[in-house]
Image (cartoon, rainbow, N blue to C red; front, side, top):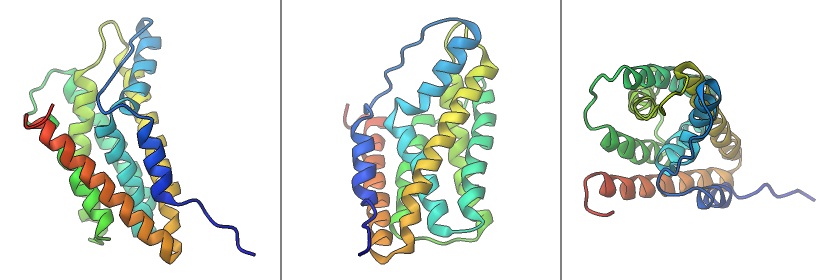
Length: 203
């Protein structure tokens, strides 16, 4: 008798239901402590960040080797560069717009099982990572250690990628592959919601 694996769509929906739709950061402590803590919490307390990072893991798992590890490594590495730009105060336009678009684009890649060459997939992931990282770096709390903050948000990002990969391995089964694509569609829809918020249509 075969044991049934959990439905990836239900797992993702349950996890997203526990995450607020807007950032709600509690910055406490000083120096390294506040930097590490705030950096770790930052990606986890905004669903616009969460869905994109989970989508990277889903897409990597869907594409298989070597994308399953290349994409989740590319995103946090490039995101750290974006975070540095934010900490340095360099102006980067349309940040919220691109963060919302990342959910739409990455969700669509998963939903439609788009399979571009690896370098194209990595470039798409890297471009969006710049904007996610910039948003984190721009919101570095006062008195926080910038390096510890970066370590915190990179670690949290890696965990979200891993979550996406763990859900994405269900693509080995026909029903699981459909469920993963449904997760991509759900992420894309949430991305549309955040895009409408970014351009001021909804609050």
